[in-house]
Length: 457
Ligand SMILES: [Mn+2]
Image (cartoon, rainbow, N blue to C red; front, side, top):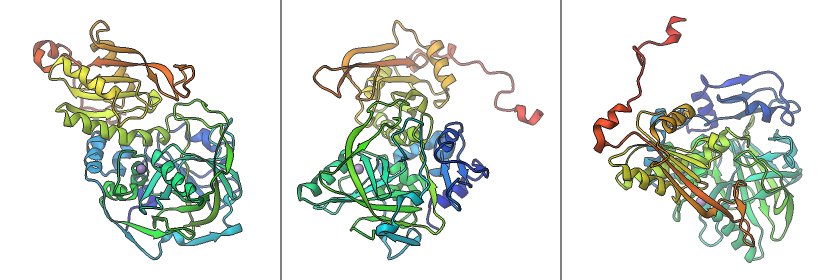
């Protein structure tokens, strides 16, 4: 059976909390999602009989490991290896599960899908989980990226397009005076969502072929109803539309990845809905855009893997890389064994200016005995192993990140800001200073790793 959202929900069934009580997608669901670490499956959606909604599919290393069929501390090395393989195989089929229902024209009404309100001050209902596919009119190459989609009516939405790849393709269509077709794929195996958040170069293949590499299987594709775009056959649903040249809609406000509203209401390209295809009993994959949800982990994962790869290539004994949701995506943590002290400073500088990361302001290096996903271990390392006199790199007056409201506007040059960078070496003394290094070994209690409280309860 090909991998899909359904095979994945089966894989994570022991981790998943099933909610049978009725939940209102407009007033309750967003809040409930923000309260869980475990995957959630809502089975009773107010106003949408028969629908199910899932979220938090890859919030933790545990579920990410299930998605990639590995163990939690190998998620990043394994993902780096698979991205490094490049494209996998896809094949075109005539039909697939996503074509069980085909709705066109008036029937392609967005109101029938249980879209959710993410936060109370959002400008309206939003799709956060849409994998938006466009096709280059010159080369036929496809690009896939996630953009937030503001529902503006039964057949209209507004798009906030972050991906330069997608923007270029839409512009090409518009320069010819044509509308740009777009297919919004919702709900598939998380490997598709991880691949969709990859933003590195991929001139000869699309993110769907990258997903095939992450999955290690051939991905089945089908043609769209209203355009030449091809989409994964085993997705839950596809919303087909087109972006007409010069038509704009009010978009926002919407909660950003770092948990604040930054942009307010702005004019963004409109998406006119032409068709919806879906499975007979489609499950809506929601992606709540609040802090500490899949919103951050999906953006972080490809960057974590690519920085790991970049450091490995420089000869660093790097063990893991993490961009924690609880750092607003502005902090990157590197787990490594330092050969010499100076190497850590090089690693911190590399991380702070790495082209594979989107938002880095602070880089922290910790040693191989720390749990990189545990905030307590990170703070322990900073508290016990870092000397502020020698272990900090602070660079002031650099260009700040556009979304970082802690940095002042650069007058006359918005959205640029005046910012800075911070590197923290919280590793133990390097391998060169063996004796001193051994003094920093954390003391564990007797029986550590052998006796477990749960066995005594
Ligand atoms: Mn791309």
